[in-house]
Image (tube, rainbow, N blue to C red; front, side, top):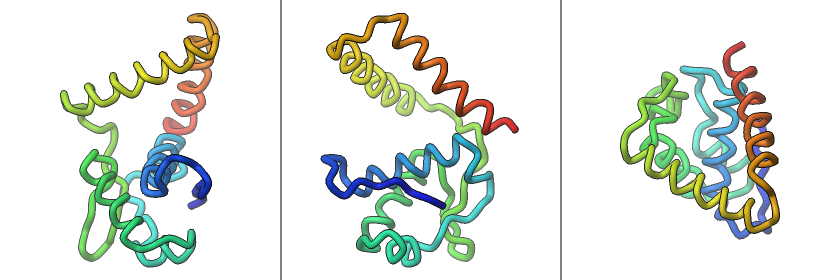
Length: 129
């Protein structure tokens, strides 16, 4: 599994790990019931503290993307996820902030919708193959 992490970013490494795993699942690079590397292995591979990886895996578990099994470790959960009111509200807040950033950068609605559609389709095609 390849993670594109930016150690100079303002985003925490744990958040970047979460985001990269979510994108890998959505793209179909990580399959349902597939095991992720152990916390120790992942930490060594990317050069971070094992507590950072553990925090990421637990956050992904809490959001429903992973199951944690004592024998198998972190495993991709059955998808699609059940969207709770909490998840829906978090997604709404994230999307609202993204739209505000795009709007303030000069992007119009048509450009935003075209880009959103293109990106959505890039995930949908790969995941459903």
